[in-house]
Length: 214
Length: 214
Image 1 (spheres, each protein chain N blue to C red):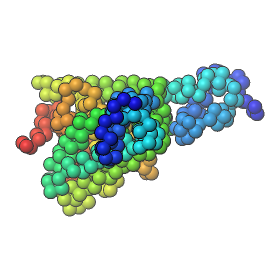
Image 2 (image 1 turned 90 degrees about the horizontal axis):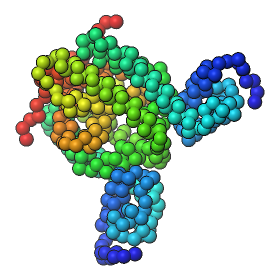
Image 3 (image 1 turned 45 degrees about the horizontal axis):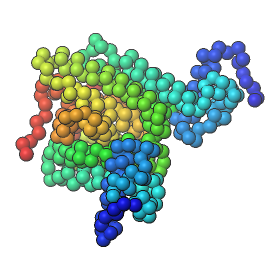
Image 4 (image 1 turned 180 degrees about the vertical axis):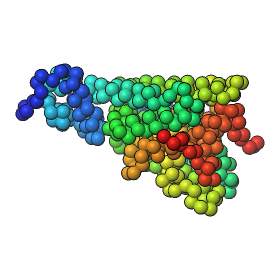
């Protein structure tokens, strides 16, 4: 099967190369269209070796989802600096998110597009990741609100809704930024900061927008 | 096949009943698990009649997506009153959106969950609907920004990004509101209005949030 280089390479390194090739292939060509031949060739290994290490196309795809989900969650967690004021935390978290999705467009396509469009068990994997991010954001907004205002200006359900809004906006913008030439990660983060911060700050200080009376 | 009532019923009415039954079944049980038997029974017609009118499960599902997409887009368009000030327009549009998704939870599940998770041609149908809503929202934000500020405070690309953020936030909140007992359409709309309006108003008046210097 041609030049199978690096026989002395540790298993972890070789597996990583296969996973890199798989994420790229699944992200760019889609789960169905991607072939194990293509992934093996891109990884510079034989197809039997891919099967030996990662069993099946389905398991390989699941492993890609888990790896990319883990990397995204970790990037966002690492980006937020808990000591900062609330706007600085949000800004840091958004930059971390959009930088990660911009630098890993194939990983983002696997998570946001491919995993969702090929049924179970893949959907459950990304739903679990999304729930984790929503819970993290809920915690941040709740803590910032308590710091800004001693009375519970925002009840838990409001905070949960705001976290859903923020995560949904970020997902939508990440897809748009990756598909629109010339939109940088910093620009996408600034768009969302502009969109969301003024409203969040008002709410944290118990200054909600009031609907007009019907 | 039992009591096939209403033989004198016009085709359009009968087709509508079948579609109602199909949306409910696909929305609640998922595309794969839904059976034509179940849909026929719920519609009170024979299974051959469903096939006669709507050809195949795939075509029936496509027809459901198109009908629900059309209804959602029309509800949002009808909800926005162009004569209102920008915040009134946004508030009216959001209430129309969340009222529609709350009153049609199965239709929303078909569009937002089922259609996306079963590949082509279904994904293209919902992407087209989403693009139409994003274009509509982009037009509204652009017009409001021009009215608020004579200088082009927001360039087209900023407006496009804001529309993506708003639509993504609304999608996320609609799913959360339908899954969370006791969250009303008005409450979901108010959450998003609170989240988004202050930032949008600032931007329209050329008062962007400024990132701290690195």
